[in-house]
Image (cartoon, rainbow, N blue to C red; front, side, top):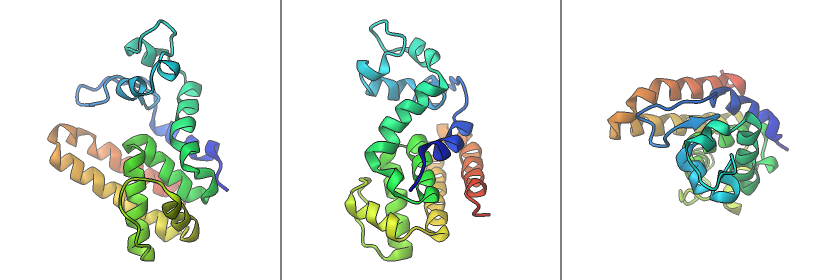
Length: 185
């Protein structure tokens, strides 16, 4: 059974403090929480400073604990990641935080299909079949393949959206660091 804190320790390292890069489509970001994503959560979760709106001040008001709480609620618990091995859950969770849960599911589905012949629909949904394939096929090779899928996604994204190419080196460094963190190197 995977532990959220172990997975989040890695993600938190890479989702540092306040950043407002002009090429980031999410807008101002703090501890990995972008303004765009915060707004998508609605007022109950997104109005961090309690002033009745969701704006850059809410992003600035975030604490590391706020980010961890939101990530756990939105990227860990709904996908049953605690049911997975620690390595699979950590790779999936970090991808969900960085690229969104649909992309994380696609990385996992492609990896399962490639290595295990799972026949999963690559639909971006963490359903029962995808979760079971990740449980049954948990291995160093599966996690490695998930990370390869993720890295290829970044390369394709940078090629298709040149304004994001400035992030490619950092994305690749993050995947390489995750390989080390999970003992895959």
